[in-house]
Image (cartoon, rainbow, N blue to C red; front, top):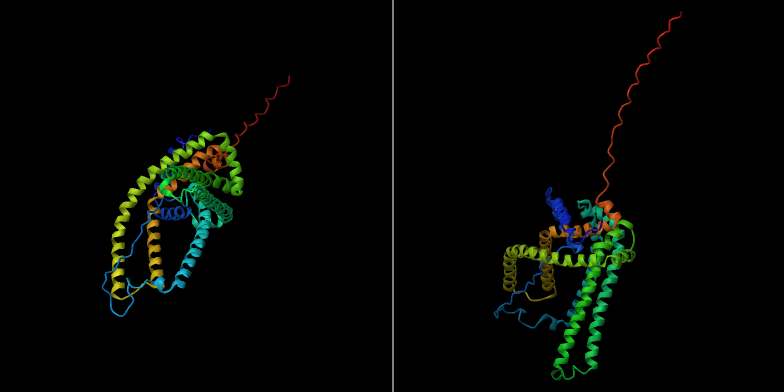
Length: 366
């Protein structure tokens, strides 16, 4: 029988406890952290912005200084080229990590169902499925940015046609009311896209994994269930928001404590690097900027991975929660999650020996 969103919490907790602690395997934690991080299931690692130190006004003679003529003003063409290169690089990273994320979603699903995480075998098995999800995610991202851009553009166009920007001081009330309405509508739009994303990774991915279909075909199947059980799926979304808030508070407190312990040596190393660069008379060039960007990205990646290690219980619990909610409604997943017990091999009892034939008693002849 289908279970409610509340009923699925207890088996999901038991599943996470058994997979992570019975027995505890550190290698499994690392693999699950890696898969969960790339699958987007781990909570935010708490991105930290590291500001570069501002040197004093005293500089070595005969060199370009940190506070001298800025490098972009000296080489504007290189600065523009660097900006274009960064944009292209960012788009390339977005496409690359979207593909990796698509494959990792299926690896995470397999890891929760099988209670074992094997990245290499999972990657080879799920590349084709990940490619189908990758196409969906690219189209979804384009639709999301197009919707946001179109909404903002239409709102700005309406305000411009109403001449609210020409004399903003005389239209404060209209701008405030219109801004509140636009913010509310924008929030609804973002929530709608977020619900589609959650439904895709929680319910469409299992359909794609077990039936070898595309994301659009999976959504057609899911849509028929959504129409029959609107209240149950709405309760699932609401309960998942509540659980995510609770998990975010717990994980956030633990991550804050660990990050503060890590930032002390990292911050000290950064200060020493700035002082050493200042003493050596280094200036902001293409190479020093690139070095700072690489170092910052490396530190951020380490912090995010540490955050995913802390989030491993949540990485296992939330996919398990969706699976235990969806399995009673999806027989193929239920058969995979609760396989029927193997037929007991009952040894047939040996045949009983027949009683020996008793020869008939001879009848005496008279």
